[in-house]
Length: 408
Image 1: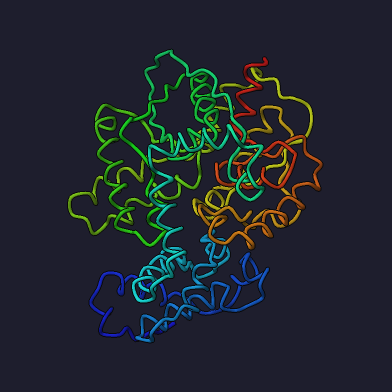
Image 2: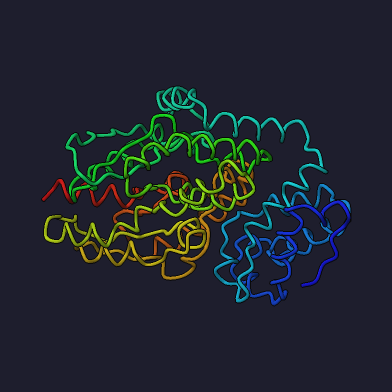
């Protein structure tokens, strides 16, 4: 696709990157068939092809409107379209550019601005844990829409104390320690069982995704730099990887190299961080080999929901089902639409609740067809969002592996 950048963008790094991405696009439309919002809403402008057209027009000098902003807001950034695209269009990078430009040119109303500010400042705040504890204490009295965002209190269990020659870093996450603390301790226990010690850098915080995707890309980059500073001494001491058990954080950290490529002070370090980052599922081949015959899975099927940030953002597919299967678990993905987003998508379920609920219920309907004893996933947002719509337990896959290990 050819585009003529306006004078405003032709000599900028963003403009050049967007132009290179657009050049790959042939407007074939394959992506519309796998776009969740297009499938729900049926509007071309609520699919990748339509949004690309809108961004192209803005880059060529057309003034964006609130309608332009709305169609970009409705995008889940699930990147399913990238998995489908035969030309390798990096839609996720393009929509980041388009949103930043449009948000600069189209002011939001006071209510929308306040909500976005509270999310980007609140989710990564030290006060989030206290607020979550309060919410959990009065959870039964909360209205349904708010109760959905407050999971029941969870026992974190013990953190292993053995030391091993092999060390990995783990990002604790901004909300996971308060919402689902057992995910982190279960990760540490499973890795401990295979001779790997899990370290957490106290100064590392949010991966940067929340601010980056909520009109504050520079704030997001500042968090990325802070994490690099927190992790770098550990890398110099020889940790072998940075392990992510929240795939949404993982896809962001794996792109630090891209997001900070124009920062002379951090570009090389950011690229090194990206290269060393691994989703926890990427360690499953080694984990399965070490634990074969040492776990006792509970009876019954597990329905696995692969998060978009795992299967589309990181392009990791099939590993969880395969290697848990080798350990004796019976794991199935939904018989249809396993590639579609569940509607969580970071803060999307708060900002676009109606669409998010529709996608959640559609996903739960498909997962329910395998009659699972539990649903497992790999991202805190997906787990909380799906659990809000079902009485079937929804957990991280590492938690059920940890339980099977302790039962052996």
